[in-house]
Length: 246
Image 1 (cartoon, rainbow, N blue to C red):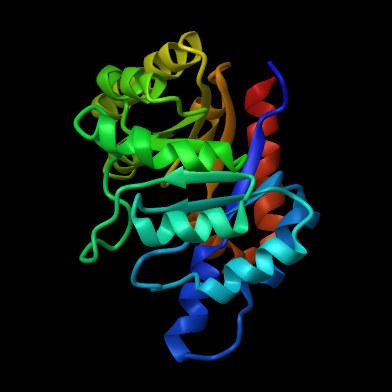
Image 2 (image 1 turned 120 degrees about the vertical axis):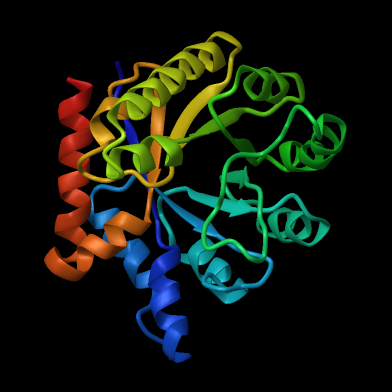
């Protein structure tokens, strides 16, 4: 197995900043510190309601990063135009609802196949690697391959929630589904990523999947940084991932 990439999501640095309407803490500073700590890329979710990351943050990240930017966004005309203007290394399409606290579940690619195929075509032509954020469901994996996505990111939120709730049988069943879908996606020629809700306690079983090449982790790391600092928090996640990889 090759080295597993770590994408650090800096959304919730912006959440803290926006709570006071101040200029700090600066997500760009967090992104640069993440680079120093061993992050292989930076993830930022530009939501339609701009509740954390702003357009100016994306401008700054595109100008200053030396590692790839993964722009998470909803599949809307506004977001497509922003992505085509910036042309980030990667675009990850996620479902988005105004009332949700965080992304709930994955895209229903199978039901929205024609629209999503048309949506991603210009992004692919612009040189962006398009990723689809999906649940551990074979229908969603197969539809993602059919419409020409380069990557699927498997939603690990249910697995992490079951672990936190002590529902160990359900956790292990979800982990097995994730393992099977990673293998299926890889067999269909898709690059496999995973993320959502991963912590020090849950990361290693997912990191051990041989087909997974990247994990995207944010909220836990920003929270842990309050206690140990951002660089040590990321370095510990990097260590756990590398250990799981063998």
